[in-house]
Amino acid sequence: MNRCTRKWPVLTFVFLLFPSLVLAADTVRIASIYSFTGHAAPSNLLSIRGVRFAVEELNRTGGILGKPVELVELDNHSTPIGSKVAAEHALEAGVAAIVGAAWSSHSIAIARVAQASSVPMITNVSTDADVTRVGDYIFRVCFTDPFQGKVMATFARQDLRLKRAVIFKDLISDFSMGLAAEIRQCFEKLGGDVVMEVPYKHRQENFLGPVRRALAVSPDVIF
Image (cartoon, rainbow, N blue to C red; front, side, top):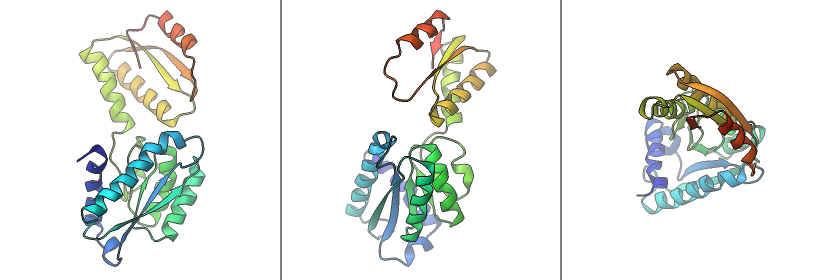
């Protein structure tokens, strides 16, 4: 079993929690909401392909609760408002569950629609803790920003015994900004010193200047 299909027992478990979502239908209709177009599309491609592959695997092995899975793909156009609209279209299509999105800001927009209609949603890579705080119909199969930040900061301080840190953060990425904040909080709580935060922008290719600034303050570690 590969990494993709290992995640799908979680979806089956969700349907065991909410069996009424599939008992009345001939197929289990699931929406896949990701960025098929727009600036987020390149980073969403593996998730899109993973969902397709997993649905094929599920249907080859009997589907979910003995019923074939029907995949409904919807484009969120790389925006939160597009994600909200896609979620509304998913509900209009009568889906039993939603898989997606990738970016946390997109997933939060979808989650609010799904929760309000009591439709389960599972995100595979959205790490912002606020995603699943939307409600009890919202799930994830990845670690959260607070967990990742704590693990990295703790490893640097307690295992490697490093003191001075520099953090690089993408100014237009909710994920990067959130993770940077979590690392800083935990690292400093453990007695470390974040001597500099270096901003950069998504798709920036030349990091010579930022790296030189970081090295100038003699850090023990760069996040």
